Each structure stands twice: as structure tokens, then as C-alpha cells.
Length: 359
Image (cartoon, rainbow, N blue to C red; front, side, top):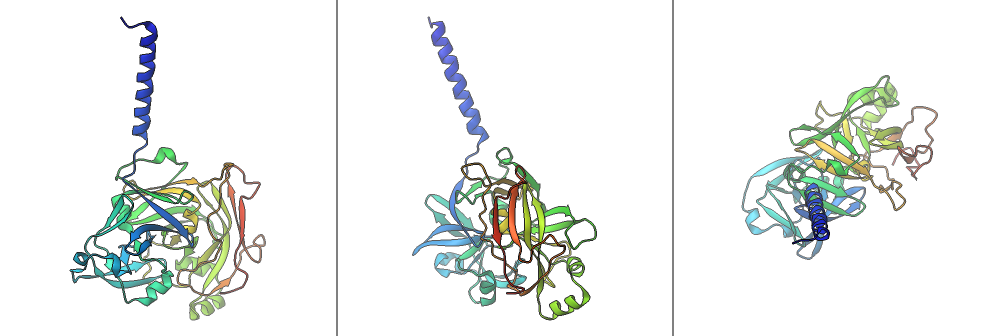
């Protein structure tokens, strides 16, 4: 006969076992984990190469993955003769590449197989504009096949099966508007040069190292005088300004914003883009199938958000710019200051931006 004490002990053990099982079910395991580096605010995935580690830029705006380095491509993947065009929205350029077969990229026990990528070997303009010090770009195919979790602080990228729900682990949620396989974020605001608030449809582009770009004609028209428009358009320049922007529960004070005079191949649905320097402030999940972007601010040991971005000013195609501010509260040389929603009264970090009217 089992004593009451043994029965109680057995019930406790069963309860703990059930609890552990429930916790295990609530936290799905990733199917692959890769190391990353944040370089120029952008996420770079590290893989094993034939002569040592190689890095690939992670780009939500790239319609296909691309390769610059033929040493990473097996002979079987080079057999085809098809060519295709790939667009780079952040720099307003496109290139023709050779369509590839499957290319396996591994690091340790984790493997990602790129399918139907493109090999680009002769387009120096694209590599220069991208400042491509990497072996290739992993584009939208990664996000179409997985739920992608990125932790800039721990320098890890985790891949989960489609349909995996990680929402309980994150503080903030933004809806993604999918146009084909390309992600957009729509938000309503009134920026300093606007007469009234408007909805902005912004491409979520992790391949662009800056914060925010507007290339809609309506923004350029409102932000400039007739004389300025003539001068800037003739010299292919844009306007660099600063504005206060809320994104999640972080408030970016004096966020650098570039307003382009023109951008090639612009779609009518697109007002601009949100780049990597905003995403780099968060542990985040990009879920194409669930149409959501999940965010939690990076925090230090004391629980205060930390700043990862480098503070540099980036323009999409390395354009020159005219610095222009809208209102007396903006300093001559903007200082990007980040606040948390819990502590608006004190800045978390500040970075001086620029120091001249053009670069």
C-alpha cells in the first residue's frame, strides 16, 4: 500500500512534469540558428566558407538572394542558362544575374538552402552602391520559408517553421502589409513639413543602413521651395532633415530622414522605406505568413534600452544633400536621442549626426 506521503510526492512530481511539458510546448524550438554581426546597422549572417567564415547581408527588400562569390556555388548549381532581373529598392538600382540551382549555406549544424538565387559577377555599380563587403545577399526567400527571429544583442538569428507564434515573447506588434512577397508598414503621422497627418506606406527594408527615407513626390514638394527643387533636382540631391518619430515604445528624437528628389523604378504604393537602423534597436521577428513584425527593445543589465546604431547619416544611393530643418526646436546639427516609453524625461543615448550641409 502506498502511503499518503508517497502519493503526495508522486502527485507533485507529475504536476512538475506536466508543467515542464507545457512550457516546452509554449516555447517552440528553432529549426536552425546562425551567428550574425551588425555592420553599418545591418544584419549580416555568418556561414562557413571554403577558406573561412563568409557573411551575407540579410535584406527584406531583395526579391531574390544573390551571390557575388563563385567559390561558394557548387558546379551543379551553375548548369542553368536562365537570367533574371533583381531590384534593390533602397538604392534605386537593378541588375541582371544568372539563375542558380540550390546552394547550401551552413554554419556548424545549421543549414540554409538558397533556391533560385542569382549570381552577379560583373555589375560594379550595384556592389559599389551597396558598399558590398559581403559575399552575397539573403533576400525574401528566407522570410517566405521561415519565421525569422533576430537578436542584435546576442548576435543570433533563429529560423522557425511557418506558423510558429512567438507573439507572447514580444512587447510590440506591427501589422505587415504584404504586396506580393514584399513587406510594408503603414502608419499615420504628421511630419514637420506636412500641413496635416497622412498615412505612409513604408517598405520594410533591412538592406538599407539608415533610418527613414521618403521618395514620394508629395513629400519632396512639401519640404522644398520652387528654387530648392530646381537646384536639388538638377544636381540629383535630396533633403536631409530630422524629426521626432515614435516606433513601438521607443521615441526617436531628431531621427535623420532623407527626402529624395527622385528614385528610379518607384512604385505608386510606396512612400518610402524604414531601414535597418530602426530595426537594430530591437530584438525582432519578421513573419511574412503571419503578416506581423514583433518587437522588444534591447535592454542592458539594468533594464534600460541600449543603442546599437552607429549614428552615421546614410543616403540611399550615396546622394549629396541639403540640410534643412522645420522649426526652431531642431538644432543646427541634429543629435539623435532615444527615449523609452517608461522614461521620456531622460534620454537613453545620444549620437551627433553630421556636421556639414552636404557630404
